[in-house]
Each structure stands twice: as C-alpha cells, then as structure tokens.
Length: 215
Image (cartoon, rainbow, N blue to C red; front, side, top):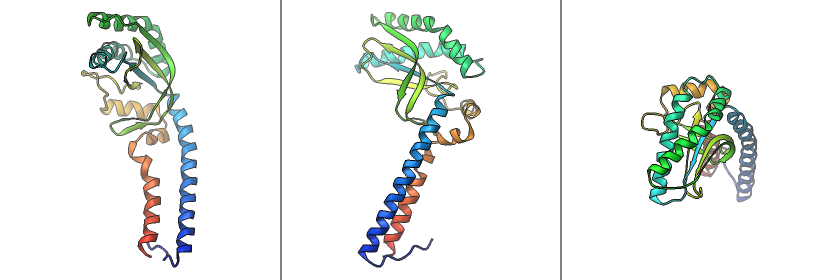
C-alpha cells in the first residue's frame, strides 16, 4: 500500500491527530458494540464460580476439591439439558444437594467453613479459555463461596459445558466448541474468538507507522 508523503511537521501533527481521532472513534464504536454483544452472550450461558476462604495453599486446594466434587455431580445432571432454561432449572432443583456435597468435602478435610451457594448475577472480568475469550460483564452464575470468601476464585462456563471433563479442568474439545456455536449467534461466536479483539488496533497502527516510514 502506498502512503502519502509527510512534507512538514505541521502535516505530521495534523495526520497524527486525525489518526488518533479515528482510532478513538473506532474504539468507542467497538466498545458500544461489545457491550451489546456481551449482553447477548450473557443471556445464553451460565457460569460456574467458586471462591476460596483465603489465598493460603490449603484453602486454595480446598476450593479445587469443592469444585471437583460439585462439578462431577453437575456434569451428570446437566448432561441431558437441552437449553439454558432447562440447565437453570436443574441447577435450582439441586442447589441444596450441591451445598451438602461442598460441606461434605470441607468436613472430610478437617475444616468447618460455612458454604453459601446461589444462582446469581455476578460481574466477571475478561476470561480466556483456549481460543475463546468471554468479554467482561454481568453473567448469571452458580456461585459457591467457602468461608470468608476472601481468596482467589475459579470460574468457567457451566452451560454450555466448558468446565467438566475427567480431570475437572476447563474443556475445549469438539463437543464443547459445537455446543458453544449452537447456543450463540454467529456474531457472538466470532466475538469470543480471542484473536479478533486486536485486528482493528493493529491495522490502525500499521497505517500510522507507514506514514512516518515514508518521511
């Protein structure tokens, strides 16, 4: 691509300001689009959120043990859920059972922490699972708080299932990808592809760099 030659410092300043303004406009537009897209994505998924009592190694290990025990139970219960509504109904129906499962794990490890469990709206930061990045925002989540709930937390996408495998880590196999693509619109699915967030930024700076390279 042939860029125009910059003839003076004044031209350079005007062009720089023009591109900075253009980038700001594009960024603002994309921000509004991402907000709307996030709301659309949030309406179609349920997340899983486990918060540890503290950041000690023991409490963090306990958090993962609770995650595994509840996750194994929920993966079986949600296996036949056809959509988000059914998944939510299954979760609500089994809330007390999940709490008892968490309390059992905690007691077996010699702790007496309280457990709070609920299906609630929660603010999440940006989170990447393999090739997929879910935008920051408010999502419905099954939330388990252990004890004081002051430790680092763990989260994943419970519906469609991007949480559960034999090892209880986030799974991104072909079934998970297909399920995600099925529940999201094409635009929403493309939005969560991690590599797309940076294309406009890189192109804008590439053009600006080209202008200066030809001085």
